[in-house]
Amino acid sequence: MAASLAASSLRASSAGLRSNSALLVQRQRLGASAATVHRAWGGVALQPLQFNSFSASASVSATDVAAIISDELKFEQESYEKPSLSPPAGWEINEKDGRSKVSLTRDFGDEVVQVDFTAREYGTDDYEEDADEEEDDADEDDEDEVALPESMTLEVCILKENQMQVLIFEVETDGESMDVLDVSLDKMKMEAADEQDEPEDDQDSAYGGPVFSELDPKLQEAFTSYLEERGVNAELGQFIMDYSEDKEQREYMTWLKGVQSFLKQ
Image (cartoon, rainbow, N blue to C red; front, top):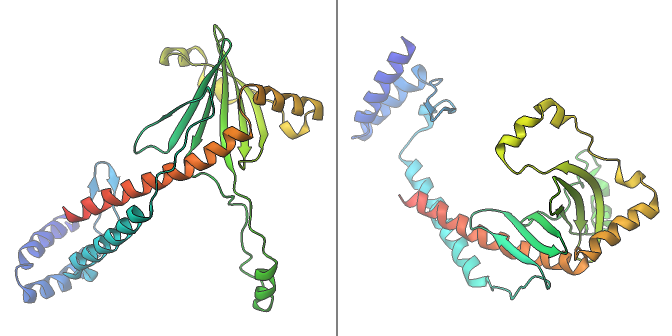
């Protein structure tokens, strides 16, 4: 019965929008009877409709947002300068518009080296302000605050011809160095059918390798040299940092255009 009442009220509200007086009446009715009505669209449950706060100002708000976005887009477009970026020798870059993931690949003997990263994924999030800190210490803390170094996390995969396994490195770079965080050996899945060869539980429980920082220092250094020999070095790290920033900027402007177009329709 509540659903029927809500549907009836919604139809009445739609017709009542033709005049301001009718709108006020419908808002009073629907505010009490349909405040908890939920709609499902495409399998996604929406939040309760807040009829008591609905007004013609909603279209004004959309106009305001569109205007601000237009100004922001204009500013970004006018200030954007496309940099001249080329990957280090031997590397090929692969990216798609609208996707934040970027891949770099190169051949090394019978191996294929692939480096994946997500655009603008740098700047650590580990730092958190203590909300309970006394206000008297705020000025002193601001003076002592040191800018955190920017860094990015990369995934480096080493694939060998005729090998069904892949050596995977998790690497962090700040553009000046490459620091290995983790090393694992995983199966290379060539086809979807291969996933059925091993139960999902076994895949989840597969040994991922030792804690890298606990390895013998000589082995840690050897892994770093292993990657440098394959072109995963500071030069590549700096290129990735620069390219990531530019990629993010381009995607941001595209995003602004998309939202602007949506609001105008």
